Structure formats: C-alpha cells, structure tokens
Amino acid sequence: MSQHEQPDGDSNLAAVGALLAEPARAKVLLALVDGRALTASVLAAEAGVAASTASHHLARLLEAGLISVVSRGRHRYFRLAGPQVAELIEAVARIAPPQPITSLRQGTRAHAVRYARRCYDHLAGRLGVAVADALQEQGMVVVGNGSAGYIITDDGAKSLVNLGIEARSGEVARCCLDWTEQRNHIAGALGRALMSRLLELGWLARESRTRALRLTDAGQTNLPLRLGVRLP
Image (cartoon, rainbow, N blue to C red):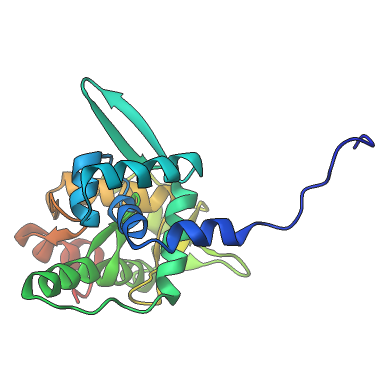
C-alpha cells in the first residue's frame, strides 16, 4: 500500500440496512429472490406503489449493486445481482418477524410459499427440506465433517444420474438454511440441477405470480417412489 492509499474500514452495514428498511424496497427484493427477472410495472404491483415510486426504489437498488437490469426490446427487466444477494435476503428473513396476514389471499399465498418455493435457483420450503432429509436417509448424500455442505456418495451419484441429474461422487453440495423451516435444504450446483430436473419431469410446476412452486400429481407419486421423500 502506498502512503497515499487509505485502507478500507469496517463493512458499512448501515448502508445496506437503510435500503432494506424501506418496505417497498424490501418487497421488491423479496419478489426477486427466486431468481426471476421482472419488469418495473410488475415490481411496482408487488411493492404496492406507483410506477414513479418504484422507479426511484429500483434506481437506489441498482446504485447499491443489489440488483441488475437488462433491456429486451422496449422493456427493462430487473433481477438480483447474484446468489450472494439472495443469501443476504434469506439470512435477514430468518431473523425478521413475520408480517401479519390480513386476508384469505395473503394466507393462501403465504402457505404456498412456505410449502415449496424457489430460493434463487434451488428448491426451498417444507418440501425442499423434506427432499434434503430423504437424500440423507437414502444414503445419497452425507453431511461432511466440519463443512457446510452435503457430500454426494457413490450410490447417490448413480441414483441422481439415473434421474437425469449430473452428479459426481465426492462433490459437495452447499447447505442453505431455510428461513421458514430453520433447517437446511440443498443449494449450489446440485440444488440448481435438482430443481431444474424436477420441473422438467413435471413433478413441480411454477406459479406465475409468486415464487411458490406447486407439487403436481406426478410429483406426489414419484418423489416418494424415486427419492424416498416423505411429503410434508
């Protein structure tokens, strides 16, 4: 370091906290936490604010590096800047108090999100935790000693490959602490491949308006049969 360079100080948590403290901005980030790219008008509706107000909040989040934007034709699509931002939102959600439910619609949506949802690029919620439990019980993954991940076993790699999921014995799949269940589900490359394959097989289906995932009839049959999942 030269004599003219100044060392960096401690992390400025207050700057991030100020961004999250605004309810509309928090709702925008929650809407994007499943990895989708959404237009400003959709995010304005999610946040319950006018389009002009949403534009101001989006500009603040862009400036802070929490979201990114791409243009497609006449429209601009916003998404989280990366998985590290999703991890931040999930971490805050784990210690944040729940919002009160004031309508049947909100209650139905909250139940669906808690049951199964996209956590950026992998399966979360009660179903995500149940899948992680099943893979451990079936001996497909084991918890690594002193690591924050699951290690794929020989049998697990074979079973996953037979299901159409790329996996290698000895690879580590990252744990992600579920904010609604306070237990781990599977993230990282395996989590991403697993959720993508379950969607391809039609065992899960996306909900267009929320980050919730719907368990299909095929999923109710095949998740217990093929992976030993005890459906919540």
